[in-house]
Length: 368
Ligand code: G6P
Image 1 (tube, rainbow, N blue to C red):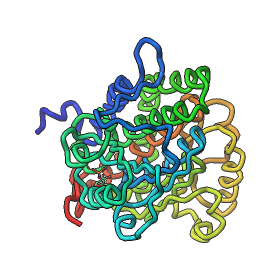
Image 2 (tube, rainbow, N blue to C red):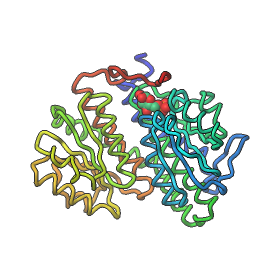
Image 3 (cartoon, rainbow, N blue to C red):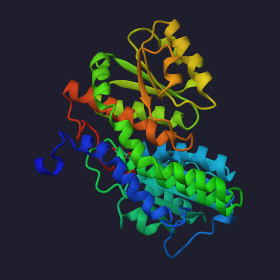
Image 4 (spheres, rainbow, N blue to C red):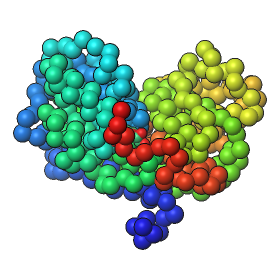
């Protein structure tokens, strides 16, 4: 046990650091090495993406957050409508199933009971099913019509890290494949997005260098009773994931919110005892997020800003800033979740919780 995670203290920490490799391995299967184009190899059943008119994504926990990001990508790039559902809700809701509909089932383990049941229910109703699965030969892998595999390798820590970023990587490639099949992505655009993806492993390394800063920030914030995480666009689900990571391993209550929704409730909670983590790459929504930060500061809140390094970072009235290496807007959620993983990890270590086996949680929930 000790040797397997060496030189790391916990599996979760090791898995955070394995992300450049895990993402690289996943990309290898989805991008043609010579042409640098998307090449999704499906299993023998195949799927005709051009005929798909409607997508439902179903998953639990962290995998559900990956689905929420994928909705933005697929709708923006391929112009196909996407619903994202929690598996335990979908399976009992009697949602109408569209002809030419596809269900995407996302699961690290491929064995989560609710996800598996939702998938079987959809198959019976006539939907085609694409799995996004990390464990080969798992139930979901075997039963799906086609599978995109993630190559995170075994994930031991209960709090998912590398499985999440590889799910996002595979789903980003799927969104591009879908856009190509629909004829709404030209070769030049594809090249641009593929280049962003191929740069990810090196950029993740550049995010990991902020580990010591995040540990120092964790020391400052670890005594808070609650946290608020804010983001917009594809970084809204990343805010949800940041809050989930913190809850899972540090047992501190945390909520993720769409930044624009803050004024409809959470702003009432803000004071110096509720740190606010803002996930805000510099993009078209950046100025809107800055005004949210100003609202928090005006109410005495403490702000940790995860943003693009450079000019923008200096403009923000945050208490702490993690400057992330510049990247394309498309891949930003994959990079911006990493500081949140490290923040949760350090707070949990400082609090002395069982980071890899947090109380009451299981790695794979195979009962309803
Ligand atoms: C459990 C794990 C989570 C995971 C969720 C879904 O709750 O603790 O980390 O996100 O199950 O698991 P799956 O294997 O289906 O992705």
